[in-house]
Every structure is written in C-alpha cells, then in structure tokens.
Length: 553
Image (tube, rainbow, N blue to C red; front, side, top):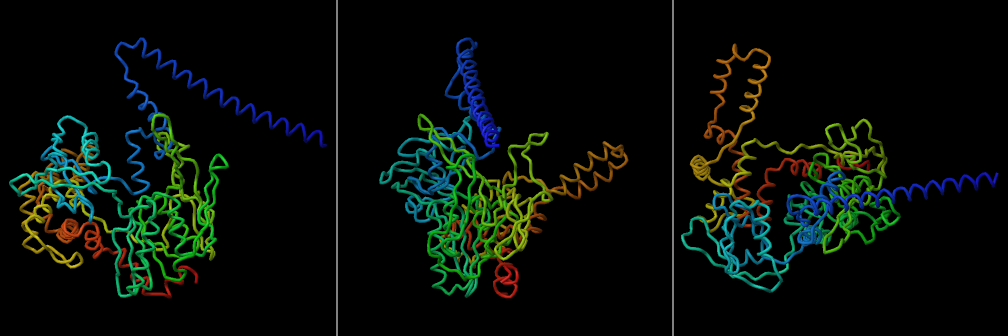
C-alpha cells in the first residue's frame, strides 16, 4: 500500500514537473519567435522600423487580451502613476484642459491654497506662455499629446518659480503671474460639513496614501461640532490603495477584525489584512453612499462594513472590481502594473463582476448573471451575494439628468458663462445659499443662444429611429405626413427646453459658479443641497429603530 502511494506521488510530481517544463518551453519558444520576426522585419522590410513605437504597441496588444487594469507604463509616464497612488506631485496645483476656441490649453480648475490659486490664476484663463516660452497652438497634434506636453512644463521641482502668461476672457491685456512650484497634495476629503445639528457628512473622492487619516481628522472635527451620526459619501470614488480602505474600516470596527483577504497564483500574493489600530468610534451610526462608479477600495470599504453589520449601505450597486494590481519595475524605468490576485471581504465573498478569462462571441468579458451568484452571510446572519459589486441595503437611484445637461457639461459654453460671471462679480453669497437670479438665467439663455451650442434630444432621436423602422416595414410612405408633422413639433426650441429644465440648469450653474469662488468645497456645498440620496440618508439616521432593524441590532 505504501509502495503504491509512493508511485502515485512520484507520478503526480512528474506530471507537475512536465507541465512546468512545457510551460517554460512555450514561453521561450514564442519569445524567440517574436524576436526573430522583428529582426527579420527590421532587416528586410521596405521602410525603416521604429522600435520605440512598434515594441510598446506590441506590448499593449499583448496586454489587451487580459484585463483593463494590467497595463504597461512607459518611463515617461511613471510620474503620473506615482501621483495617482500617493496623491502628491510637484507643480502648480491646477487641472488644465484643451480649449477648442483658442486652440490652446486653459486652466480648468485651480486647487484651493495651491500655487496657481495663490498667485491669482483663475478657471478659464488661457495659457499663452510658460517661463517665457510660447506654448503654441495645438494644430494637428493629438489633444492628449499637446495637453501632456503643457502639463509637464507646468510641473517641476519644488521651490522653483516661473512666469505664467495667460489671456483672461473679458480682460484686454495679457496677465502675468509669478508662480512658485511646490509639492501638491490632492485633497482626498474635499468637503465635510454638518448636514443637521447632529449628522455629519464626509466626501471621500479617492484612496490615495493617507486618506484614512484625512477621514479621521474630518470625523473628529465633526464630532466636536456635535455629530452623533455620519454619512460617508463614496459615490464616484474609483478606489486606490487597498491598505487605506483597511485603515478606513478600522476607524469603525474593533482591532483584530479580518477586513480583507487577497488570493493569487503565488503564496506571496496571498495576504490577510486585519484592523491593526484602536478604532475611533465603534458606535456612531454610519451610512455609506455608493453608486455604479464606486469601485475597488470603495467596495472594500462598503463591502467590509456591510459584512460586519457596521454600516447601512445606500444608493446604487457598485462597479464590481475585485481585482488587485501591483506595480513591477521593468528595465529602462518603465513599469508593468498587473493583476496579481482577487480580494475577498470578511464574509468570504469576492465582488468581481466580470470574468476576463472568459469572453462572449463578441469579445466582451463574461458577466456572471445574478442567478449564478452565491449567498454569503454577514456577522449578524444577513444574506449577501458575491459577484456584480456590492448591493446596497437601501437602493436609492440617483436623480436622472436630461440630455441637455450632459451636452452643456461637455461643451465649453457653460464653462465660458461661469468664467464670465466670475470676472464680472467680485463676490457672491456663501456656497450653501448662493443661487443665480432669474435675470442671470435669462442672460445665460441669451449667451447660449448666441453661441455655437448644439444638442440632441432623446425624443427627436427616437422619432428618427422610428421613421427608419417604419420605412423598413413598409409604412414609411403612408406615414410621411404624420412623421413630418411630429418632427416639426419636436424641432429644437432652446427657449422651451431651457425653461422646462430650468431647475436642473440653475443647480448646475450654481455649483460651477461656486467652484470658481470657493473651489471644490464650494462645489460640493452647492451641489449637495438638492441631493435626494443624502436626504434619504438623513431620514434614515433620524430613525434609529429602522436603522437598527436593517442591521439586525
């Protein structure tokens, strides 16, 4: 019996060794083949090949068959990766964007208390020159390439200075600002405030290094102001560092709780993370707001707090990213950021929505249907499911906006009007109470009507589609008169559309104008005033009985 068992073990070991040898052989064979193909092309192809372009393109094509998070980062772009993970870089502290009207870049948003804002630069300023060098117009250059070039010129070593020349709409002369570069830290918590006399609110936009400390500070400040319960807003937060999510959960759960498990191909990828610090508050009632753009570390946070029955999750189902990436340094300064493991939250579930190892006939990643997901249990025995993101305890859909708002956001015209408003008004009311007047709204309508702004309405597009279907089915000729009459009724009437959607447009203008006076904190203070999801969260926290029933307390 023992001899037979020994034979079985030896057979399995030999199979494993053969498999590893075969795998290594295939890698070596195909790398050799690729090398031979390229060298043959380089030697005999009719035109000169440029390895610096062809090889990176080939690498991108190779990675394109995996998942969208595994990516090759050239040496010249690794600084951007560092800024994304740390939230820090050296520069002027402003977002820039291409502005078609001038064929140049403009300052889209200066950050509060950062070098650009301190120097007096405003949103809407058109960049003319940096350190005495004309930035030139974009011309035929790709927009990304042109914008990246100017962004790189604005960045530099801390404590260096330069002159920035800009054109400000409505101002005749060129403006010159002396800007002193510094280390820029992007605010992970751009806004926190008291929603009522006892309910605090924290907006967290990213999981960069140290963000859990920023949440802790905001929470402590709110508690000093009388906060007895908390709303934590993770909507549109695409994630970041997983360890920051662990430390954030740790603020509300006891030390020693299992928060996160990672499982990958190798033992080094298999890691468990426990809460390691003394919690800030084990008892404060907590509501987490999420939506379909809450991903990765946001899902670790809300998923773990849901599994531990420590918070009520409210909003819309999250994105469903249960994959972990690690950067690996490559020769010549480049980096390969690749997926190394899946993550699992306390109940044992993985919330990954898409299976990139399986593809549909059209090439799309396979999405696990809800009917095939598995049931897990929270600490209190509530049923939760894996796959497809985190499902909220209370589903509240975000307000649906009309197409007109999206077209206004995408155009430069709304930005132009808000820039003009800022340049004509030195001060406005505080962000929570500011609202444009009816006269301002009429001026905005005239401003848009006199511009090149265009938009499509869903009703008009639906009519065009219906006309095509009717023609395909043989009813086109007989219904032509009716279609023409309806099309005339649905033709653009900008005055009607703006009046019909006045409430939404005014809210959008209020927030964008407040952004120009009070920066990002002003934007959130304004836009959240009419937020129905926040209203639902406040109503829940005012009802302890309902809150405790959801968590089975």
